[in-house]
Length: 421
Image (cartoon, rainbow, N blue to C red; front, side):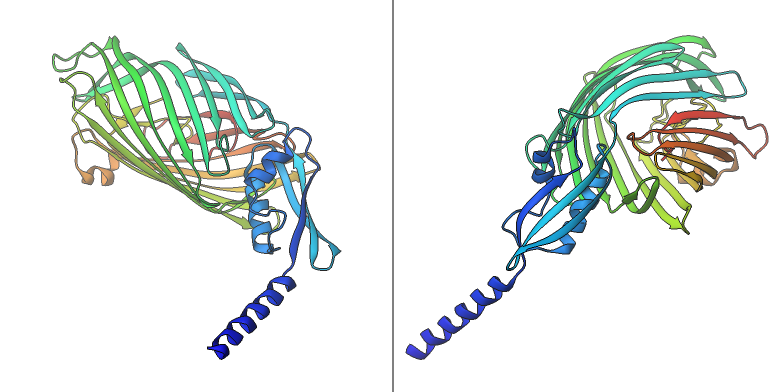
């Protein structure tokens, strides 16, 4: 009995000595930040005063900070205070975060559309994103967005979005097509959850009005010239993200899965499911190169409808193809490009890039064999430039020129803010 107690006391004494010998964080100090609140940095950091000093945790915190729109660059320093107590400093180089949003796209068919907006990516110094846009694509559209990923704590946040989109959309049927005015007026609420550094989830609901109104082109008795219906969309998103940023350079892997279930208030319209997954891979090539690739695979309920959800579009998947030139109920799209830094100064970087965008679509009501049909496959190589302000978040002005290499394909310029992917 006494021998057992002695053994327990010895083990407890040894454990106490081992704990006492651990390096401990005396204080976590934040430096260099002006607008970004130190309280937010401490809230989302895993390193805390009183915890054991662990370099892997510090490195993870720095990677998390570099993903914030407000942070251009970050690094840590560790200084001995006394005994086994250390002061940890997180040094932050801030971005300017009130950013205009500009997208302009044209083709050789003289199509012209643009989107203008402004967003604050660090509202109240709390990494809250708030802003809106105005779009002119024949018709006028607008949107308002609010996103606070750390509203409640490091794990839980909230997003609220409203948009009123009005565009002219081509509708394809029986080898012909017609033009419709498309309207989508929606209200969306999302709950945001990030259990750890690499994984995050979003779940929410979107209530929207969807309308199609005939403008011109072919007609068919089976294709309505007017359609207006209220719908509910239930959304789920899962992201795995191991990306690491070093100014304009990115390395690592990212997977983004999006699943949506749409139900209509009218019994005449069937329920609808759509899902897609984006795989991103980035690799540093030497000191000045960056290889970037994105693979999207998506499928939707395979109704034989002219209003199929996956579009072939200039500003979304194939640079130079035009503004929504086709639709499908499935899509496989590969974008790959090599970015090379031509100039790298304290605040400015200029990149040149060469790319290949390729994609194929499943026809509405078709089968998986459609992906292999030559008429559904489009390939667009091209080249472009990036003008990057290294102290303003997402201040990447891009210009790309893409040209189709199959017979009869289009070519055109694509302008925008931010990398294409």
